[in-house]
Structure formats: structure tokens, C-alpha cells
Image (cartoon, rainbow, N blue to C red; front, top):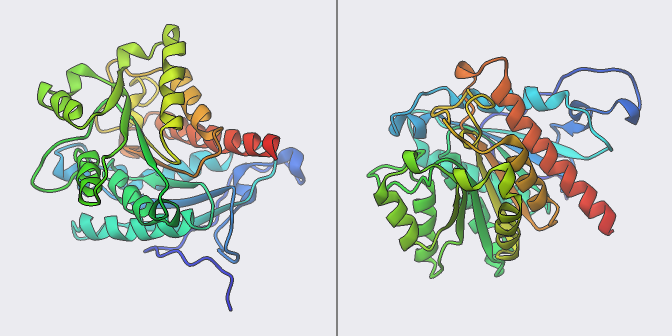
Length: 327
């Protein structure tokens, strides 16, 4: 019997390449540890899958180009130096074609479920923020959630993404999740950090309140608000057994993340966002992360790609360090 991990994707992963300073772990970078061959079932210290989609952004009347985000996030992460050797799998990409977002969501869900069931933390490289609903489908269908694990979702975002549109888009994923949980007799545990009041109508705030959404506004997430941010983050971690961290890069200030469909006039400082990510990762709980809205066509000096890659790097190295220390 084969012991390889079967992950359904549309295109196979390409080998990672990057800076090479010499042999041995003293010169270790991500591209040295990522394999594209799922020749064992896991677990891995990191499992990557890409979601090449612009369709949700197009439907939401945003600036398209995020379908190339996975390629740029991989390139930015590849040369980042590792403090210790990890094991990592790149499973390849799910690609939305012919405007068929719904089918792409289902395929992404199948891929996420397979990777999470291998007992690995999963990193989904988007793509527009419609990626979050596909990620949710995988979490919903994973063994740990089907067996009763409580799902908790934290969105780092300037927007609630709770639009009630006729067709799913990059503005609807968390309302889709809420309705999906209602169909299963559950209430979605959804929380948001970094919400911008000028970017969300009063109707969206009322929708969030009706769904019981906990949130911190961007003006409540400054460097002088660390204690409040830590308390919010810790309460999120405690509220679930399985954690879904959705990172819309427009949560960051425009100077840090210019390459997004809707750059933030205010945003949450990188120091705070990175602190939140590390704190969640260090919990060691089953974790799926999606990174959304990187548009390489709009980026400046790869700033947004590097910011997104640094957050992924911090999540995975913090998680590994915490699990190793607790072993």
C-alpha cells in the first residue's frame, strides 16, 4: 500500500529556488527544506497549497491580479533564513478557471482537508480573499472538526467581508461560513482584528453584531494597545480547538502593503500583526492559515510579498519552537 499523501490540486508544485550561501544547517533557508513530492503521509512542519483566483475580486469590483499572489509569496519566502531545520511540503495549486469560483472552492476544501488530516499546519497562499471560504470547507470536512473539535476563525482585515451578495465574492466569505455553520446547527465563532470603520458600512457592523462577531478596530490596535490586543488574541485561542487564521494583507498600512486591491489608509502596524500571528501559532493547536489579496501587479519593491512571507515565516517558526520546547 502506498504511504504517499494524496492532495487534489490542478497544477503540481514547482521546485523552490533561492539564495544559497553554502552547505549545512548553518546556511538553511526555506527553499532547502520544501519538497514538492508527497512521498510520505506526514505530519509536516508546514504544508503549503496555492489558490490562484481573481474571480472573487472581479465579482467584488476590486483590482484584479491576486491570482499571481501564490507565486510571489513562494518566491519571497524561499530565501528567508531558518533558525532550525523543518519539514515542509508544497502540494501545488488549485486554480479558478472559466469564472467557476464555486468549483474552485470545493477543490481547495478537498486539498485543505487532506493536508490537515495529515496532522500538519496548513498554509493556503491566495488569491483574493474568497480563498477563506474554500479554506473553511476544508476545515469543516476535516477529521478533527467532524469529530467535534470547536472551530474558531480570526480574520486579520480592514473589512468584515460579510457582504450579502447574490454571488459569492471576496467580500462574502465569512457570511458564507456563518450560513454553512447554521446549516450544521452551529454558530460560527468569527472574530476580526483591524476593522476599519470608514471601510465598512453601518449595515456591515449590524450584520457583525447580529452574528455575535467579536472585533477590534484598527484604531484599537496600536503599539500602546498591546495588552488589549494580547487579551483579544488569547481569548480567541481559548475559544477553539481548531484555529483558522485568515490574513488579508490590506490589514497592514499601505506603506507596508501597497500591493493589495484596497490599500489601508490607517492599518495595523506590522509589529502588532506579527505578534498576534506568533501568539496564535505558539498555542500548538491544529492550525490553517490563508494569506489573501497580494496583487503583484500593484506591489512596490515586493514589499507586500515580503510582508506576507514574513508573517508565514513567523507563524511556522513560532509554532515549531513552541512544540519543540513542550516536547
